[in-house]
Image 1 (cartoon, rainbow, N blue to C red):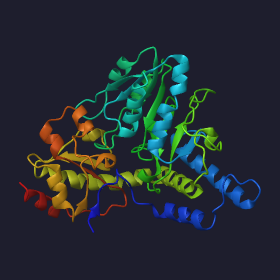
Image 2 (cartoon, one colour):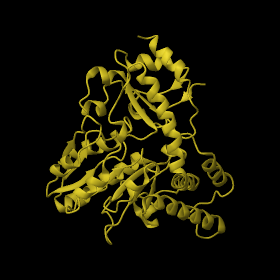
Image 3 (spheres, helix red, strand yellow):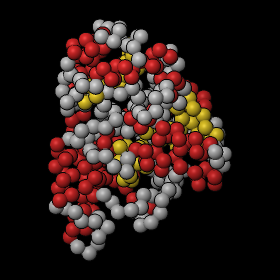
Image 4 (tube, rainbow, N blue to C red):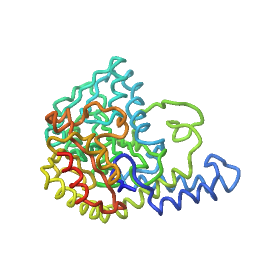
Length: 376
């Protein structure tokens, strides 16, 4: 089997998370909404514990955690859920970045068809947006600022603290899509000026199909979200439906392990990145973006004169990698992220994304490089 190096698409399940998940599939299968027996009580207690575990990573409160199916749903709830408030207040302007995931950009495109004004701020060539440009885009009627924590294609960490500071005297809500950064660079998401945080379980070693939206109170006021679906009243009425207890427990455990082990995991990821950079630079590989601003678990890199599709085909028996977001991997159009960075066409066409985790084995870098050299 090839070595899996596509952890930004999804991660393997952590063994401790898997044990918790299976226990609540097989043994503790009660409905957390059942009030008349012990099965329901234990399920509810497990869900509440998971809220605490997720909340602890962001220094949030238990009642600020809304469980969803993943970051895509959380992003939609954060953005579209503010629409009614925007209509009431007349604040119909939104600032985001041009490198956001499609789960942010497409809800914004929808709002644009309903009369909202959307300003997309481009990043610098290093892959990060400039806080001053975010601040300059603000208007008195700006409803929301949405900036991702870590870019899914480049691994570049965005300057959330500086952006939060720029919003100090503005009432706009601050949303962060933290699908790639939650549990990895923890202090960034603990800034109390961040109102809404989207997370996804399968990026932090939990199963697919579970995530959360953190809805941090500002003083005593919650973000004025309205639900996108109705029926049942679960999750403070914002995400109705029977709670998937086993998945929620798994996310809670994954969050707990991230808080406990993130430093140790980062050391292992940096070891792999050091090896990867050395290998690719030996054949002229050009990293995408400023690597001092990138997660140690991601490397986006281009080899001059070689198309990324050809490389992926040649390496398919050695490593599992990608050339962009898994959500658009069936579409071979140029990456909107790398295009927004202003990179040359040959770099964009040749860019590969490798992403790994603390569970990843060392690939055979010599064999990888020899295979790529055969294409030149």
